[in-house]
Amino acid sequence: MSKFETLSATRPYLIWNGAVARAVNGDRATLAVIDLDPDTEIPEHHHESEQIGLVVKGHVTMVIGDEAREFGAGGAYVIPSDVPHSATTGSDGATVIDVFAPVRADWASVTRGEPGQGRWP
Image 1 (cartoon, rainbow, N blue to C red):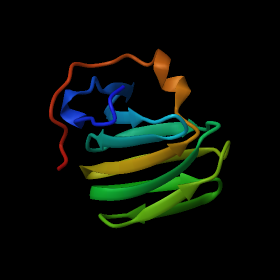
Image 2: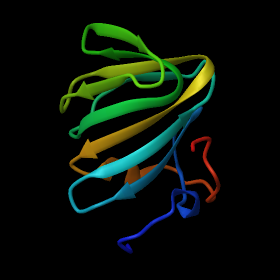
Image 3: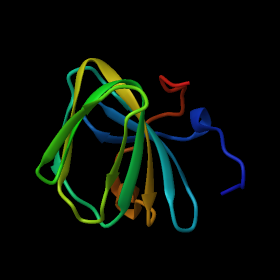
Image 4: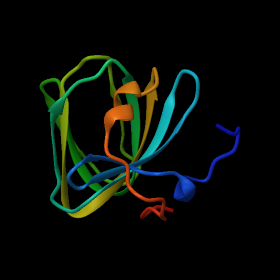
């Protein structure tokens, strides 16, 4: 991969129904901009990667472990490695920026879409 990338030129990961991630991978971390459709439910899951996120558009309710919180734009969250978590969007959907360390290697097997502009910016 080049040291420079344009997210609209990358093939997005169709990670769940209603969740599309445009990601750039480094050697040790993944940066992803994830568009979430309105009223989308991301099922409980966990992964090796620590996840640090920021809501940039819309609203999302995050459940991390046994704690739930609703966020609008500017809300941030930290999900430690292997902690179960889920998310639900409201009627306006959401766009979040997530950083994962280490790289989300499990996304290598996820269906990819065609390059195109995301909902943000």
